[in-house]
Length: 169
Image (cartoon, rainbow, N blue to C red; front, side, top):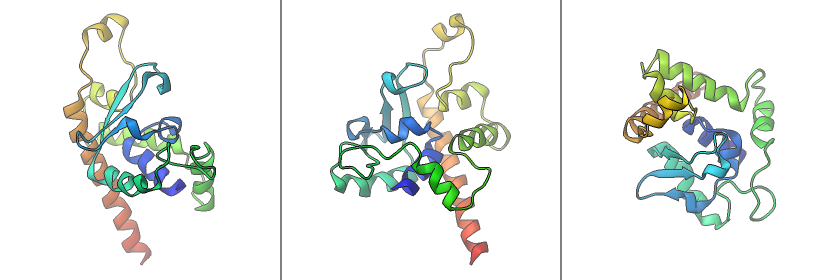
Protein backbone atom coordinates (compact mmCIF):
# COMPACT_ATOMS: atom_id res chain seq x y z
CA UNK A 1 0.00 0.00 0.00
CA UNK A 2 2.89 2.36 0.78
CA UNK A 3 4.28 1.84 -2.72
CA UNK A 4 0.91 2.68 -4.28
CA UNK A 5 0.58 5.79 -2.11
CA UNK A 6 4.13 6.88 -2.94
CA UNK A 7 3.59 6.47 -6.68
CA UNK A 8 0.28 8.35 -6.48
CA UNK A 9 1.96 11.11 -4.47
CA UNK A 10 4.75 11.42 -7.04
CA UNK A 11 2.33 11.44 -9.99
CA UNK A 12 0.05 14.06 -8.42
CA UNK A 13 2.91 16.16 -6.98
CA UNK A 14 0.82 16.30 -3.81
CA UNK A 15 1.76 16.60 -0.17
CA UNK A 16 1.95 13.40 1.90
CA UNK A 17 -0.96 14.32 4.16
CA UNK A 18 -3.22 15.18 1.23
CA UNK A 19 -2.73 11.70 -0.22
CA UNK A 20 -2.82 9.71 3.01
CA UNK A 21 -6.03 11.38 4.22
CA UNK A 22 -7.71 10.98 0.81
CA UNK A 23 -11.26 9.57 0.97
CA UNK A 24 -13.33 8.07 -1.81
CA UNK A 25 -16.00 10.82 -2.01
CA UNK A 26 -13.20 13.18 -3.12
CA UNK A 27 -12.59 11.11 -6.27
CA UNK A 28 -14.72 11.57 -9.38
CA UNK A 29 -13.66 8.88 -11.85
CA UNK A 30 -16.03 10.11 -14.54
CA UNK A 31 -14.68 13.67 -14.42
CA UNK A 32 -11.15 12.31 -13.82
CA UNK A 33 -10.77 14.62 -10.84
CA UNK A 34 -9.68 14.45 -7.22
CA UNK A 35 -10.94 17.36 -5.11
CA UNK A 36 -9.00 17.92 -1.90
CA UNK A 37 -11.16 19.81 0.62
CA UNK A 38 -9.95 23.18 1.86
CA UNK A 39 -9.58 21.97 5.45
CA UNK A 40 -6.93 19.47 4.34
CA UNK A 41 -4.94 21.93 2.24
CA UNK A 42 -1.98 23.86 3.59
CA UNK A 43 -3.30 27.04 1.97
CA UNK A 44 -6.84 26.46 3.26
CA UNK A 45 -8.30 26.49 -0.26
CA UNK A 46 -9.92 23.56 -2.09
CA UNK A 47 -7.57 22.03 -4.67
CA UNK A 48 -8.63 20.09 -7.75
CA UNK A 49 -6.18 17.54 -9.10
CA UNK A 50 -6.68 16.22 -12.64
CA UNK A 51 -6.35 12.43 -12.74
CA UNK A 52 -4.26 10.81 -15.47
CA UNK A 53 -4.52 7.23 -16.74
CA UNK A 54 -1.58 6.24 -14.52
CA UNK A 55 -3.22 7.73 -11.42
CA UNK A 56 -6.54 6.04 -12.14
CA UNK A 57 -4.72 2.72 -12.65
CA UNK A 58 -3.49 3.02 -9.06
CA UNK A 59 -6.89 3.99 -7.64
CA UNK A 60 -9.26 1.63 -9.48
CA UNK A 61 -8.14 -1.65 -7.81
CA UNK A 62 -8.22 -0.03 -4.35
CA UNK A 63 -11.99 0.53 -4.56
CA UNK A 64 -12.49 -3.20 -3.94
CA UNK A 65 -11.16 -2.78 -0.39
CA UNK A 66 -14.26 -0.74 0.46
CA UNK A 67 -12.34 1.33 2.97
CA UNK A 68 -13.15 4.85 4.06
CA UNK A 69 -9.61 5.89 3.10
CA UNK A 70 -8.19 5.33 -0.35
CA UNK A 71 -4.80 4.31 1.05
CA UNK A 72 -5.81 2.25 4.05
CA UNK A 73 -3.27 1.47 6.75
CA UNK A 74 -2.91 -1.60 8.94
CA UNK A 75 -6.05 -0.74 10.89
CA UNK A 76 -9.36 -1.04 9.05
CA UNK A 77 -10.80 2.31 7.90
CA UNK A 78 -7.68 4.18 9.03
CA UNK A 79 -5.20 5.92 6.75
CA UNK A 80 -1.72 4.67 6.07
CA UNK A 81 0.86 5.98 8.54
CA UNK A 82 2.51 9.27 7.65
CA UNK A 83 5.89 7.50 7.92
CA UNK A 84 4.98 4.65 5.54
CA UNK A 85 6.29 6.23 2.35
CA UNK A 86 9.50 7.48 3.98
CA UNK A 87 10.14 4.03 5.43
CA UNK A 88 9.56 2.52 1.99
CA UNK A 89 12.22 4.82 0.53
CA UNK A 90 14.61 3.74 3.29
CA UNK A 91 13.94 0.05 2.61
CA UNK A 92 14.69 0.75 -1.05
CA UNK A 93 18.05 2.26 -0.04
CA UNK A 94 16.92 5.51 -1.64
CA UNK A 95 19.22 7.49 0.64
CA UNK A 96 18.84 11.21 0.27
CA UNK A 97 15.37 10.93 -1.24
CA UNK A 98 12.35 12.33 0.56
CA UNK A 99 8.69 12.20 -0.35
CA UNK A 100 8.51 16.00 -0.40
CA UNK A 101 11.55 16.08 -2.68
CA UNK A 102 9.43 14.68 -5.50
CA UNK A 103 7.32 17.87 -5.39
CA UNK A 104 10.52 19.83 -5.87
CA UNK A 105 11.48 17.52 -8.74
CA UNK A 106 8.10 18.17 -10.36
CA UNK A 107 8.63 21.92 -10.06
CA UNK A 108 12.09 21.71 -11.67
CA UNK A 109 10.77 19.45 -14.44
CA UNK A 110 7.81 21.78 -15.10
CA UNK A 111 10.13 24.76 -15.53
CA UNK A 112 13.04 23.13 -17.32
CA UNK A 113 11.60 20.28 -19.38
CA UNK A 114 7.96 21.22 -19.85
CA UNK A 115 8.51 24.99 -20.14
CA UNK A 116 5.39 25.48 -18.05
CA UNK A 117 4.62 29.06 -17.05
CA UNK A 118 5.33 29.79 -13.40
CA UNK A 119 1.64 30.31 -12.59
CA UNK A 120 0.75 26.91 -14.04
CA UNK A 121 3.45 25.00 -12.17
CA UNK A 122 2.62 26.74 -8.91
CA UNK A 123 -1.10 26.06 -9.37
CA UNK A 124 -0.34 22.36 -9.87
CA UNK A 125 1.47 22.40 -6.52
CA UNK A 126 -1.39 24.33 -4.87
CA UNK A 127 0.95 27.18 -4.00
CA UNK A 128 -0.44 30.64 -3.49
CA UNK A 129 1.55 33.11 -5.56
CA UNK A 130 1.45 36.84 -5.99
CA UNK A 131 0.02 39.57 -3.84
CA UNK A 132 -3.49 39.51 -2.41
CA UNK A 133 -4.59 41.79 -5.26
CA UNK A 134 -3.12 39.45 -7.91
CA UNK A 135 -4.78 36.43 -6.29
CA UNK A 136 -8.12 38.26 -6.15
CA UNK A 137 -8.03 38.68 -9.93
CA UNK A 138 -6.62 35.23 -10.72
CA UNK A 139 -9.79 33.25 -10.19
CA UNK A 140 -9.09 30.29 -12.50
CA UNK A 141 -7.29 27.24 -11.17
CA UNK A 142 -6.07 26.52 -14.73
CA UNK A 143 -7.51 23.00 -14.55
CA UNK A 144 -7.43 22.26 -18.30
CA UNK A 145 -3.82 23.37 -18.64
CA UNK A 146 -2.86 21.53 -15.44
CA UNK A 147 -4.51 18.38 -16.81
CA UNK A 148 -2.24 18.51 -19.85
CA UNK A 149 0.80 19.22 -17.67
CA UNK A 150 0.01 16.33 -15.30
CA UNK A 151 -0.42 13.97 -18.25
CA UNK A 152 3.04 14.93 -19.49
CA UNK A 153 4.46 14.49 -15.95
CA UNK A 154 2.84 11.05 -15.62
CA UNK A 155 4.29 10.00 -18.95
CA UNK A 156 7.71 11.30 -17.96
CA UNK A 157 7.66 9.42 -14.63
CA UNK A 158 6.30 6.21 -16.18
CA UNK A 159 8.84 6.27 -19.03
CA UNK A 160 11.65 6.94 -16.55
CA UNK A 161 10.58 3.95 -14.44
CA UNK A 162 10.41 1.74 -17.50
CA UNK A 163 13.96 2.76 -18.52
CA UNK A 164 15.23 1.93 -15.01
CA UNK A 165 13.55 -1.49 -15.19
CA UNK A 166 15.16 -2.16 -18.58
CA UNK A 167 18.61 -1.25 -17.27
CA UNK A 168 18.15 -3.32 -14.12
CA UNK A 169 17.22 -6.27 -16.32
